Image 1 (spheres, one colour):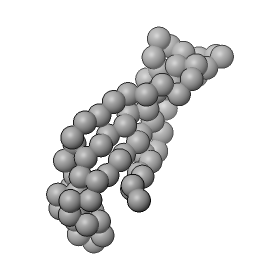
Image 2 (cartoon, helix red, strand yellow):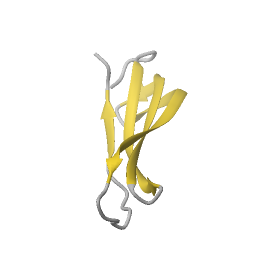
Image 3 (tube, rainbow, N blue to C red):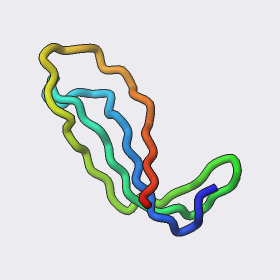
Image 4 (cartoon, rainbow, N blue to C red):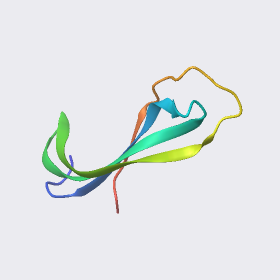
Length: 72
């Protein structure tokens, strides 16, 4: 379980390319407001899109699995 008040950083691949050529990911920053053995709820304090470099060819966008990173 996560500790209430713990800062949290979430990263997930964005399923749409920027200008049809550049992969992006969504970064979310917040803190834990509720947690139990089944999951957690967090507040979103800020978010930003980041680029991940351009692709040489266009591939159909597919949702990527979410990545979760805990500071510390």
